[in-house]
Image (cartoon, rainbow over all chains, first blue to last red):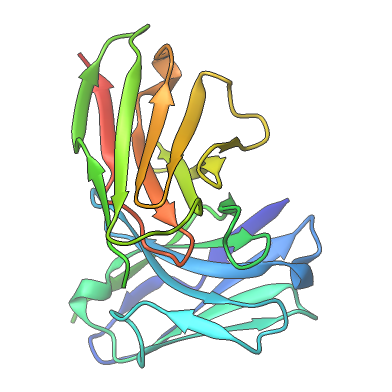
Length: 119
Length: 104
C-alpha cells in the first residue's frame, strides 16, 4: 500500500502548479482522498478531500477558490491544482487516504512533495 | 469551522513516564477524532481513530478517550521511539496545533 506525491518544485507567485499522488497496492477507487500541507517546523493543515468517484469535494477556507482537487480512478492518481500561488503556499504537501468520509482517520500517507513559491 | 486546541504545546518527559495530551474541539464532534504521530522529515502516522480505537500495529501503550469536545491521548509508559510530535484531527479536517514530546 503506497502513495507517492510528485510535481512539487519552485513556482513564481501568481503562477500555477499541479501536484500528483500515485496510489498502488490498494483499490484506489474505493477510498476518499485528502491533501494536507505542512510548512517545515510548523503544524499540519488539512486542505481538501474528494470522494470516491470525484463527484464531491471540500476545501479549507484558506485555499478555497485557488486550489482544485481531482482524481483519475483509471490511473489511480489524485491531483491538486494550485493556482494564484502565494509565498505562504510554500510547504510540504502530503496526500492521504481515508476509509469513507474521515471517520476512521487518514491511515496511509505519502512521503510529501515540496512546493516553494518565490520569484 | 471547528477549531481544535491541543495542550500542552511541548511536553518534557522521561522514558517510562505516563504522558497525557489533551485536545479540545470548539464544538461537539461526537467521537470522530483521530491522533497521529509525526517524526521530523516523515509523514504522520495514524495512532488512534474514533477517539479510542487503536490503529493496526500501534503499541497498546497508546490509548485514547473522550467524546464531544474533550479528548485525551495517553502513553502509558513512554518509550524512546515515542519522542515525536502528536496531532489530533477532527473528522471534517482541522488538525490541532501539535504537541511535541521531548526528552526531559
